[in-house]
Length: 155
Length: 155
DNA sequence: TGACATTGCTCAGCATGCTGATTATCAGTA
DNA sequence: TACTGATAATCAGCATGCTGAGCAATGTCA
Image 1: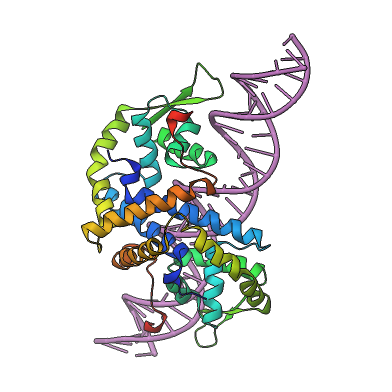
Image 2: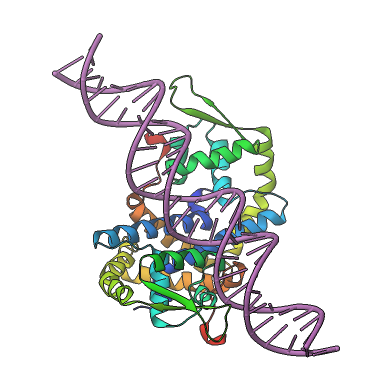
């Protein structure tokens, strides 16, 4: 069998593992309590006020059943509000609160620092190339996961 | 805020998400029921018979509390056996069973196919470069996660 | 030897992420 | 309008991963 270091799957898991650890450490250091997943959701709602949960899930490639719990926790923390849509009573429209906006503003430096930290060990050029290759590979494999990335405009 | 596609953390999560989906699909297709995590553990025990759980966790960069459940499930499936060490009564020595060996042999083509599939969209050269960059980045960030990769020889 | 720290393992608790099912609602059509 | 299929959200259940705590066994050192 191949060595672990020759298995893309192992490297993917390992890189993700380190990325999450770095994110949580930086965010905690800055005095915030937000996971990478919660950050992405909060950020997407700020950019798309009134978005429903399914569209939000598609924007950040979350499973539809995962987004429920993530939004629950953000609502519980007072960073989001969720209310029924008037156009479609099945849907829940999401809005970011003032506290949510403050959190996003305050947390940004830590998030940026984390993104740099997880690429430490790579040169500037290598980091850019890694991102390019990951973008290309994930674009090609997008449809293979249950939670593909979706363009909000297409809905 | 940066676009998701400019965030290494998002790309890491997305690539890992696709990698797991591809792995599970290929393995299921081949008639097996094994997760990427279970596969790595089973494979490592075959290579290192009699290994204890902490050393195993270090070899594949799993958290010590995660390995307990993974081994539980492999034992339950009859692929591993776990018994107390005679040298250190705290430790549990792991051995692969005949069924475990058969499973590993049978599953290998599916695992190899999955590794190729998750790099589809990249050229041969790009795939190799992606792996090189992931190896370099994970090596640099190794100590940042709670479950660093450890060399078994060093113990 | 006896106190102390360390180590191997497990557990409770929480957050992702998935499969598959269910409920309520909507939309298109016979 | 009644039927049918699709859709938004949630739920139960399971598997990773983590934090932090605890227990039993081991190692160290005065």
